[in-house]
Image (cartoon, rainbow, N blue to C red):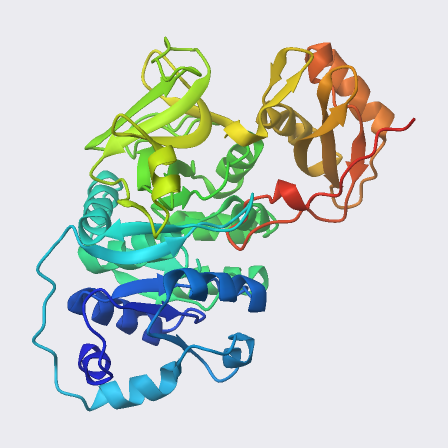
Length: 451
C-alpha cells in the first residue's frame, strides 16, 4: 500500500484523509502512511457534508480515501480514491523501501469530536503512538497469547491507537468488526472467545442485557474488560461485576494525549475513579490561577509527558491557549485522592455556578442513574434571573418504567444540597451522543424557565 501511495505522488508531510468504516484497507493505509511520513487524517464515518467539508478545508489533504457507497457524502473539490481499488493494486505492488526517520514528525491529525463547536485537529507524532502502545501493552499485560475483540471505530484514537497499535505491538490475535452490534455481540464473544475487550460505557450497558448464563460463559474466558471515552457509571461497573465476574478497568484518555491515567491491572479498580497516571505521565490538579491544590480539592486537571500532542493543526492561537508553562490544560475537572487516584467530575465548560455555588453535573448524573426508574441522565445549565444559572436534568426512563418528576426531585432533596437540585426534569427517548458515546450537551433541547 505504501508503494501505491508513493506511485500516486504523495510525499512526506502530505495529508491523506480516510473516510472508511472498519476494514483491512483502513489498517493498511494507516501503516503505509506512517511508513512514508504521510499525515494520516481519519474522518468520522458518521460525518456528512458540512462536517467533512470543515475537515477537508482545515487539513487540506492531497486526497480522501473512501468507498463507492460513502463517496456521495464527500464534498466536491478533493480527489476521491476508492479503498477497494487501492487494495487490489497493492496486492501486486512491490514493497516500498521508504521509512520515516523523524519520530517527532506528525503521524496523524485527529479531529476532536467537536461537542462544543468546530472540531480542531490534534497533531499526534509517531512517538505519541509508540509511547501509548508500550504503556497499554505493559500496564494491561497484553501478550501474544491474548485474543482481542475490537468493535470500536478506527477513526477514533480509542480504536486506532489502543486497539490497532496495541494489537500490533503485542502480537495478539485480533477480531475486527465493522461496528458494535448488541444483537451480534454474544455470538462474537462465544465464537471468537476473546480474552481482552476494549469498550465504551454504552457498550457495557448493552452487554448487561445478555442472559446471566451467557454472561457467565463469556466471563469465564475473558481476562480483561477496559472502558473509556466517556465516564463509566459506578452502578454499571457493579452490575457488570455481578453478571460477568469481572471488574471493568476504567481509564482516561483524550484525542490530544491518548492514554494518560488508568486504574491498575493488579490493584484496586476504584468505582468512579479513572486511576493513577501511566508511566511517563505527570498529572496535577490546579485552581483558577493554575496553582496546584491539595489532595481532595477540586480543580482543573493538567497533564505533561511524552504522550501529549504537538498542538492543533494550523491553530497557533488554540495551541497557545491549551498549554500553561508546558502543561496541557485538559479542560476536565478532577480531584486527586491522598493515595493518588484521580476522579473526574466533568468538563470545565460544564461547571454550573448557581448563586455563587459550584455545581458539578456528574455528581447529579451519577445519583440519578442509580435510581431504578432512570436509565440515563445528563445535567446541563439553564439561565436564571436570580441565580445566574441553574441545573436542569435530562433523563431517559428505564425499560418498563415511567418518570415522575416530583419523585425524582424528592429523591434529590433527600441526598443533596438544595442548590444542586435540578430546576426541571426533562424526559427524553434518548440522549444525543457522539459515535463513541459521549453525551453532546449542546444538542440537548433548551429548557425555558416558566414565567
